[in-house]
Length: 94
Image 1: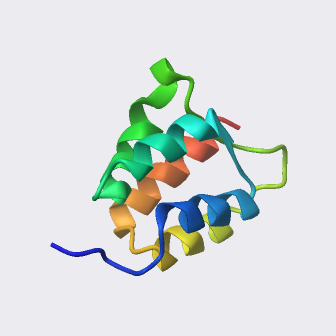
Image 2: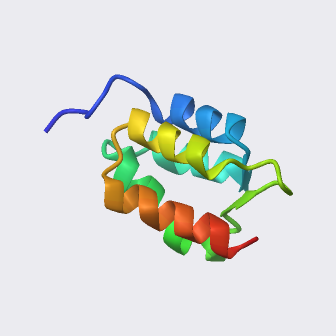
């Protein structure tokens, strides 16, 4: 199985940050995704279960745009249900 698209996990994380997502313990996220061939699956696992590692995804104040985050995830070939789960997590932390 190949990659869904040519973008890397680093481009994806940079795009999320540009959309207003704050990544706690970003260096750990980057390190773990660099080790994975299926980085999208690893990202969703870290988003859901990363708190024990100090990994959290949140929105800075009112600066986050759920539509922008959704577009980033779609551009990086995340399935709609994964987009929805990640957006639900972000909005529940507001």
